[in-house]
Image (tube, rainbow, N blue to C red; front, side, top):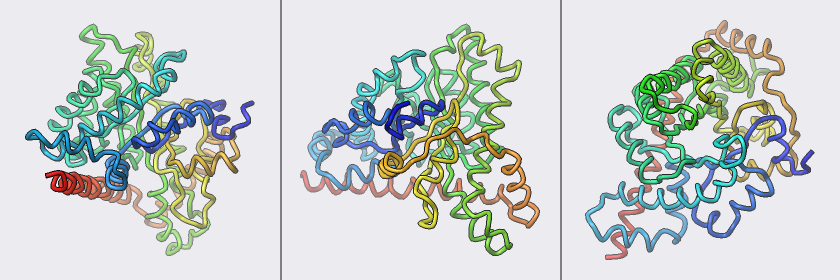
Amino acid sequence: MASNKVKQIHEFGQSIWLDFIDRKIINTGELKKLVEEDGVRGVTSNPAIFEKAISSSSDYDADISALSKGDKTNEEIFFGLAVSDIKLACDLLRPVYDEAPKGGDGYVSLEVSPFLALNTEGTIKQAIELWKAVDKENVMIKIPGTEPGLPAIQKAISEGININVTLLFGLDRYEAVTEAYISGLEERAAKGLPVNNISSVASFFLSRIDVLVDPLLDEKGLGELKGEVAIASAKKAYEIYKRVFSTDRWKKLAEKGAVPQRLLWASTSSKNPAFKDTKYVEALIGPDTVDTIPLETLEAYRDHGDPASRLEDDLDTATEILEKIKAVGIDIDAITKQLEDEGIDKFNKPFEKLLQAIEDQKSKGN
């Protein structure tokens, strides 16, 4: 067994992806080291991550200056910077992508504009544009799993684009995302196009669920369940995953080489200081899943993680937890809808800030 605790997670069938990107981590060799020593097998980015990278360093200044010489909008300038970083990261992760079975891992995710979260046609158009702009087999385009996002996900999959579905909080919506994935593959297969070279993940956000639910548990006398509702939801999502990807309908696609859309655990850093900093990573290690974690959580896990396959432990308890909160009147569907709305806002705000930072930098250059 590998001695590195992060690397050991892969032995239980789960892939660790890094939820962070900037030029420095690529150019200094730090990302390469994380791949080689910690067994990091992918990278995810989002508007907040890019905002921090671009606003807090001078690494992008020269490029902003060069890109702003034409008539590009600030958003186009941002995607110019982002595509450049994503390409470098894709090249760095390419050896992981090429490992057998090819395309199992080694992906780098780039998100469509958060302003498009409720715009189906705009999302489809930009997903295709970004896919072509990066032009790497191991890029994944991130599309929010909002209701208007569902037809965009289906269309993008039918076009042969790797998709990371983001901002998932609720079980019904997660199941709808699996439907969009399968329907997209079926559309493709019906045209005689290959389905064996497409990969997708469904990113289920965890700790934010507990941030909203835990105060309600105290009010309802269920304080002992604090920090457990998100994990219970994730375990139920995994049950859905296993059911959906073992149907006869799925088997027809699998015979053509299609691979299941894996569940990806996101928002896995503990937001409550009373919880162990590796709590969510620890609880949800299990086969054929991905966990994307920020650098500080990865470092904490390397130091004091306890790798073991736990995702399918206590499934009855997970069911009971969700039944208990329903019985006391906690409406998990309303909470997950609120989280989705807040999630869109949490990406819109840093994106606005990022576009302003580009504007400020352009002004400096003039």
